[in-house]
Length: 104
Image (cartoon, rainbow, N blue to C red; front, side, top):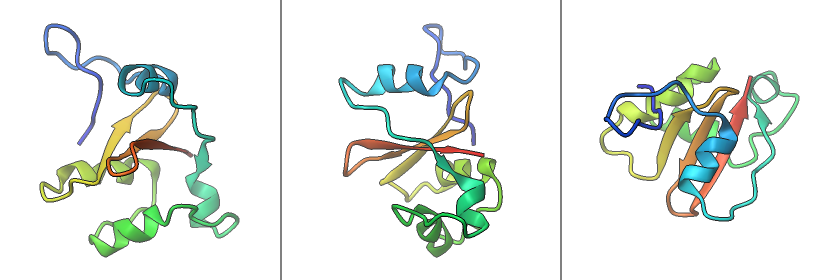
């Protein structure tokens, strides 16, 4: 379920920071603002890209940050991939070539 950047010998490293993840996978993409999962789940903020709603359509209930990693267990999902970061969870949206960054 956890996605980390592998080390050169193939072992999993400690989760990278979000900045390190962007440096590895994105050329010059600006870092997106973090999105508070708690604010979405409590109704204080809207789900800007409707990602939590999309998870629900896949049968994944998101109640905590680590639930976002469950998308990696769906072998049919090609659009989203979740990465654990030191500060939260980053979602890569393949068709848009962007990352969305969730924090607690």
